[in-house]
Image (cartoon, rainbow over all chains, first blue to last red; front, side, top):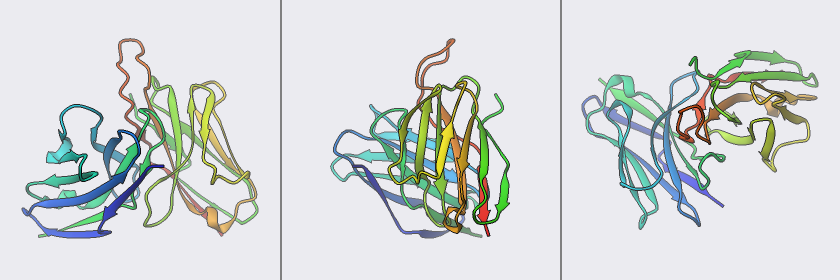
Amino acid sequence: AQSVTQLGSHVSVSEGALVLLRCNYSSSVPPYLFWYVQYPNQGLQLLLKYTTGATLVKGINGFEAEFKKSETSFHLTKPSAHMSDAAEYFCAVTVNQGGKLIFGQGTELSVKP
Amino acid sequence: DTGVSQNPRHKITKRGQNVTFRCDPISEHNRLYWYRQTLGQGPEFLTYFQNEAQLEKSRLLSDRFSAERPKGSFSTLEIQRTEQGDSAMYLCASSLSISNRGLAATYEQYFGPGTRLTVT
C-alpha cells in the first residue's frame, strides 16, 4: 500500500525567505508524485507532478520539487516566499496514472511580512 | 473549459436525512473522482469512474454512500441517513486518461471547489 508523510503540519517563513515543505512517500512500485495547493474554502490546485524522467520538476508560481528515490522523498521548495503563497499544501502519490490519489495530511504555510 | 463544478457549495442537514451532491467534470474528461476532506486532514479517496463505469470504491466507504455517473458525464454522490461524522468537504475531480479529439492524456486530476456538508 502507498502512503505519504508530510513532516510539519505548520511551517512559517518570512517573506522573501526559502520555502521548504517536506514529503516522504512509501510505495512498493515506482510512484507518481504530486503537490497540490489549497486556499481557504477552495478546491485543490495542481502545483507540479513527477511521473518519469527528470527528477527535478518545476511547477507554477515558482515552486519546484525533486524526486529522490533513495530517500523516498519529494520535497517542495521555492527560493523566495511571497505573501500570496500562504495556503495549505498537500503531497500525494499514486501508482497508476489516472488512479486514486493518496494524500498526506497537509502542511499549512504561513508567510510573515 | 469552465473547470469542475460542484453543487451545492454548502449543505446543512439534520441527522438521518438523505443528501445528494452533484459534480460536473471538465467536458472532455473521462475519469471522475470523489474525495472527502475533514478539517485538518488531506483528502481521502471515496470512489472513481471511467465514463459510466465505477472502477474503484474505498473499502472504508459505508453502504450509506452511493455514487453514480449514468451517462458518463456528471456524477451524483448520495449519502443516506446522514450522521454527524459525515460532516466534511466533499471534493470532486476529473482527469483525461485517454487521448481524445487531439487532447493528450495527462492523468492530472483537476478539482472542483467542493461541497461542504454539515450534519446537525
